[in-house]
Image (cartoon, rainbow, N blue to C red):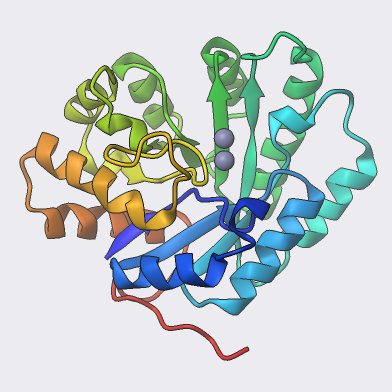
Length: 266
Ligand SMILES: [Zn+2]
Ligand SMILES: [Zn+2]
């Protein structure tokens, strides 16, 4: 019943025990997981993983950390052809990250714009990573606005005002495990916006929620995020999970019910 819309399960951090992690997430009732690519290589790995499990879907993209200079046309072409794979449901992660001093804002903006245009061309939702770059992110989204531009603000870290702006632009707000941290400002955002605009994610292997803070994160922990949202919204856990599952499946055009999906033979 739970959904993790952003989890890097195909990353090497899970190479030693991936099947165990997948067994645990199925046991814990996670029935939908989206694994985002961060460049051509990780996008390919994500697609390979999604082919093995019914409940895993993939998105292909170019993470701002991987954009240090102008992106070659060949990379964009490769990502476009990868996006045609049957279990690719979106373009991402893409976005802007000005956190590190060596970032190249101009190249990131150009790459993000190209990827947003690809999302519009292919009519797929975009998975946006935005860190210390809200002003440029919102400006870019406004400049690229189109009726079919939509997606998620993954690992949302802004305030209510920014969240509402993103929602107006066609985006859902994806809440990570940091919502469980004592000093987090995210509970206020969750409180202020409609539950239909919320999604849940782990961003595993990063950002473990309480009570696993500091350890490698894994998708089964997404239930703590859903639990926190249920608490803030004063809704039963099942109802909260059901609404979020519905939002995710509708946005990413993923059919099926909210029950746990089985593993394909491979
Ligand atoms: Zn990210
Ligand atoms: Zn990520």
